[in-house]
Length: 337
Image 1 (cartoon, rainbow, N blue to C red):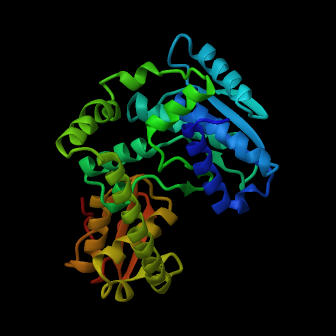
Image 2: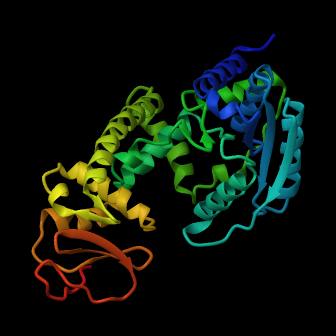
């Protein structure tokens, strides 16, 4: 007989998969396994539920190679996944490098490796993010002033990424491993105060729980869900605005100008992402929005990747490179900052 924590995790996975049955038609399900409590509890639940749905469950372990015993840790995690019911478990190695610090570089390498492990577009990769991870993500977004999109946290489904445990506390996954007789691996980096998320987990959230008499993680997760619903509604309205304004890759200022700024910026974000601009910040979007809302004949706005957004003859256009352009008045513009 399964213990209460194991049952809780299984119920969360069953509810998630029932809500997204279309993604199970390929007959396979993938689970990202680190060897920690969250991913091991998720693996057991995915195997338990998946096999009843006649779905093959595959575990994928990413070896970041950042510690001397990383290969051994990865192999142990793969073996644990098999014991917990996974039909297959494989280890993929990655090289961690690039800008943004080791935490960001490791995350980028990990997600790239997990995506490569998926054989079909319809297949899902289950991730073991819990309610506590969601609360940490919301706090990070608040601290960075990244706006509602960031504060709305992680989506339960952002295909191919699937997060069935966002309503499950981290304590439950730990208890589930105890009930299963599994000893999870504890990543030493999860206790390293050099990492912002670690300090949020070990210092900030416990302090908030103490000062506000508990329930903070759950409240932050609820706030994220509410903001996500609001953002999705605004995104839908912004999509309609974008469709009206878009003309062969440019945007008609006359269509954009009367719209609320929140919708305009969302339409602009969709336009710029579609043009290939990445790493957009709120400051970037507000600067481009000024070409609509506060037009004074100013020059274009430089964006990441050497893109320039500018206004010309009642249209917004975006291009790459170093070119002199003609502004609304028909005169060459000087670039903005």
